[in-house]
Image 1 (cartoon, rainbow, N blue to C red):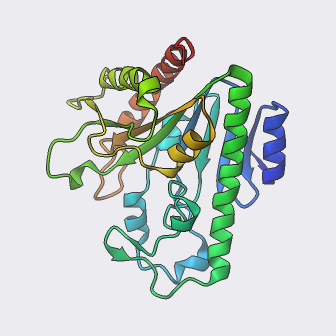
Image 2 (cartoon, rainbow, N blue to C red):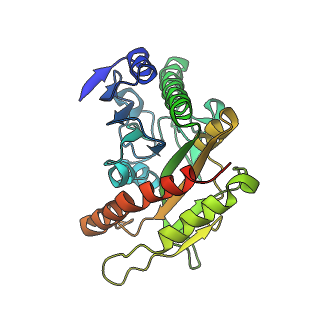
Amino acid sequence: MLKLPVSRIIRNIEEEIPFHALAEDHSFQVKIDHYAPYLCGAVHDGHQFRSSLAGYCLHSEYERWYEEDPCTRQMVASHPMVISGCDSRFEYDLNRPPELAIYKDAWGKLLWKDPLPEEEKKISLEKHRAFYNVTRALVTKTEELYGKALVFDMHSYNWKRWQREVPTWNLGTANIDNKRFGRIAESWRELLGRMDLPGDLRSTSRINDTFQGNGYFLKFITENFDNTLVLATEIAKIYCDELTGEIYGEVVDTVTRQLDEFIPLQSKIFQETSL
């Protein structure tokens, strides 16, 4: 995979050049096999944690992993356009606006033993800014080529922390234009509910049940592009052991294989729908 400066990544997109690239600082990666009417994003897939921050952090590697979204990039990696974070959300959270992207505490526990130096914050926030400059370029190009764009915003969540029955798939729609896009969201929910999972796992799907789609990735795109729909899609972590970190490869492979079918189908439905 190429390592490219952000300026070159953006220029490739503007010139419609297919490429696979890691940002020079290794903070995110972009894969474009060809320019398509839809884009997959996995902003919380990353687990990297900058070594200069390690001495400040009170959370263990496992505690960080527990709140990340492992395998979400893998589940959509075969699709033609994918952008994903490589750094842990504990360094900076790509699904929060810049002013809130660096946590002070996380899930009820203080994150840093000492205040972070401003220079360390500056490095992290520059990575955040670069990711969104590339996101803007990707969506701009997709709307330019196809008139509209569909973005699959992939996440996962820890279902065992809920003290009630929760869905396999949660679709957050609180911040999309539901008058225009509500039927598209419902069709995506219905498709996800049809997924055939291994063993006795059952695929259920609901809208705004556990999360409402309040992330910055969705909001940034929605606020800046009139003809792009972001589907904030969360899978319960049925594909791993939340307590040990063991990944269930058969489940990941099954989800990946069916998303290979479902995502292009949903994109076709979106493209055929008048906005």
